[in-house]
Image 1 (tube, one colour):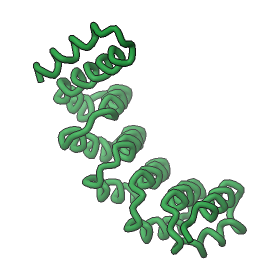
Image 2 (cartoon, rainbow, N blue to C red):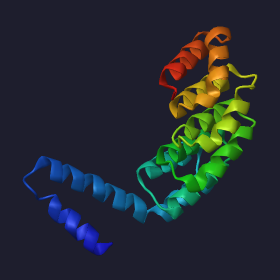
Image 3 (cartoon, helix red, strand yellow):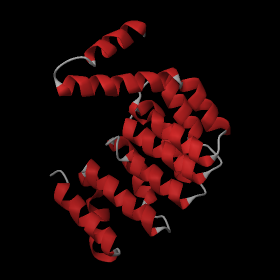
Image 4 (cartoon, rainbow, N blue to C red):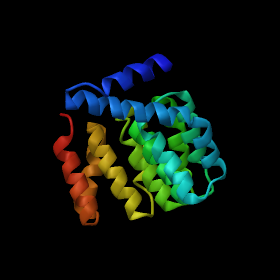
Length: 187
């Protein structure tokens, strides 16, 4: 890590603004990575705002340790922390945590359930299609709306009947999502 840091500090002296900016961002990530133990303690025992800051600090990092901390945060007693962790896990899009995100689809909080559905959209994996189709049976309009958006991004023709149904029968947001999905769908 010291060699990396030295190279990045040296790059801060470059004339080119893009190089200096990239070096500053990379140094910031190294500093965050060096504080993983501290960030995990915040996730474990901090106040809500500290937990949220820790989760979002991890959003630009990769690696198994980062994923482990975020998965732990996705099971936090606080709804906001669980939702934030799922947003970050979805952004990272590592298939190794797909089962953890799927597990949050059963969360007692509708907010967390909605975020979990949205996080699945980052994977664009046809294998999650059957699960998403089940989510269309939710009693919560927000879950259905998010699910329609995710299905639309996947663009799988097997969802055509469901999209046709929601294009006519759903609320305005559902209809719009279903119609967009129909336009993006493969032949």
